[in-house]
Image (tube, rainbow, N blue to C red; front, side, top):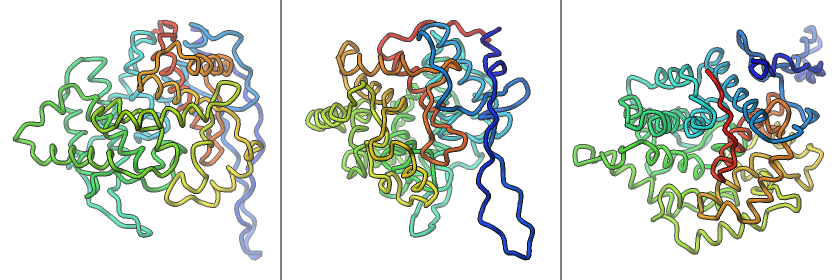
Length: 396
């Protein structure tokens, strides 16, 4: 119970007020500056402080620190569904996509999050394609993809059979596919989650392969869905990479659909990933793309934020890409004892904070630092895939 109140016991430093927005005309009184948030997640009984770089690191990575990490993930997801409700790419999406597989070590994921996902499935599947600023896309595509992954992984790890709700969600997802077989990323998002069409479409591929028996059940009665899946696979096979992030993700594509990635492509992706490992054992997200190539349209706010980071000229290792690199290598068949993986895990062990989180500065707005949540999810997955995540025995 003491750990269950870890965030409530953390002292919350007073944060400086944010800079005021553009000054209004002289004839109007200046608006009060909007203060920076104090809590990353907050609802009745849950108060998770904003992550900060100066939070102390754990003395030792182990069952206690893993329990703290699991509580952080559970609290964040529950607070989000109570206060915000939307399925997203930075909290509830990563939570339900990864937490079910960790159930044997961390306990059952929160049913409240599952209920939020199932309740978000629209009665009428799909959406009409729209065009904005020259980009054609289907609204709601990434929400549908994250929801479908979460429901599919729940079925896979908690019940072992395909549910009616997962089937409905997958149908809705596939009806938001673009004509060329891809799923188009639109709007500003948390780098690097769904910043490129390849990454977003890869998430859709994960959803259809995770759902127990769904692909095998696409018989002659579902010719449209079968055709859409084949079109998605064809697009993924030949899609030109936007950046190095897309290139190394081919290791993950080969995990979901082995027939889509050649041995040469796997070797090239692994060589690129290896070349980008830092001397300290970690990797940096910002090494994998020029800033302007993360998304089809980068805002001045995001460009300025990334350019102004203290390590902008030589980005330091970060927990998200370090964990993801380990996940990609394991999915690509690299043994857990490989020296590259050992060094990456050592870096992650040294970087966990006393709250259970792995701190990372957001590359989107720099206020709530939701990438810290994503990084924590990915770090636990990396340890689990290497057989080195201690059993934490988190209780309900």
